[in-house]
Image 1 (cartoon, helix red, strand yellow):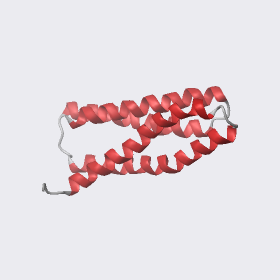
Image 2 (cartoon, one colour):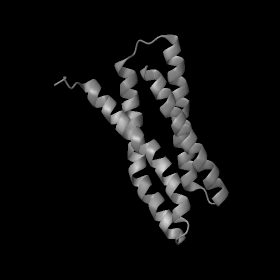
Image 3 (cartoon, rainbow, N blue to C red):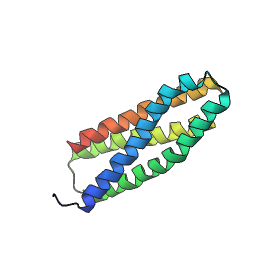
Image 4 (cartoon, rainbow, N blue to C red):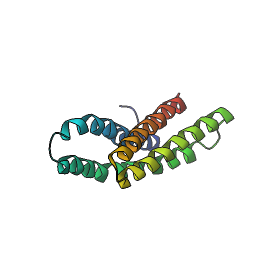
Length: 132
């Protein structure tokens, strides 16, 4: 069996949290149109339950992201630029998600939910770019 290191644990936690944050958003986006056929409380309950899992996952993403940066401090300029782009997507994803939760109109929820999903996918994409 291959050795398991702290690098393995760090990467596992980061990927697990990204799976919850990004994958959960995609899943919820697919479910919301079907849930709307029921009373509004059904959609609201599903979103609230997801948030109870999503926000801790976002916190783990940020913490393991900082751990990732600290573990590999000496990177070339292209890596740092790509990392900066990823961090901008991460910040945008968290901010738009936070605003989405606090929005009061269906239009705002739709726009902010879409932006949250797109920026989360952007962060995921640039995370893959960094791993190459």
